[in-house]
Length: 223
Image (cartoon, rainbow, N blue to C red; front, side, top):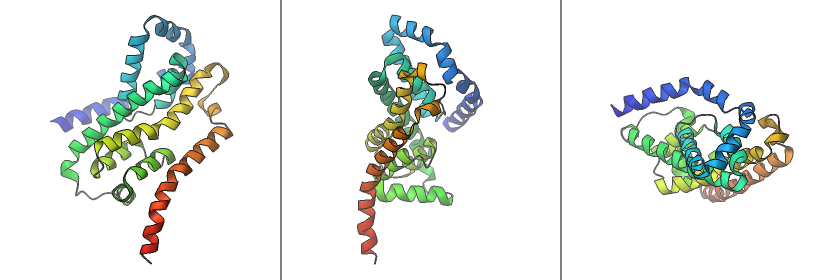
């Protein structure tokens, strides 16, 4: 019964993705700029709580609107507070998705995965939280796949929580920064200048280093 409810809710959410993308577009945020500013000024605490809740729902449902949502947060709350609220909401949403997936996959641990998902799961089993960070920073798999494979692995929930919070921070920071510069940009692509891309690449390299240091000794031992 629980599984049926989850599937129905998932289908309804997917049907609303296009509508959500329209309402959370950059143009829509600009149009509602004065209204959002007034709401934050008059009801700051309630607005912050609603933002955290909505961010958690979006992450838990793996809806592709975290970017525009981060832009809106940066515009409404400023960089540091919006980043703080986004990390709280995103972490809660990720934990909810992880917990639901782990509950649903308890009886599915022996299912046959596709070759790609099997390789990703093997990475989880071998390298744990480092591999989870790599998946977040390199964006090689959708968030829903990361949650599913993490739930199938033996990674503890508390490790998943702090790694997910750390892993979502760089991308969230970029979009939130765009929100603070909303009047100077016309599209989200304007945010990804060459120095932002280089910074993200260097960050990914720093995350990959621990993984490389763990892999190299294993390769040497197999020779």
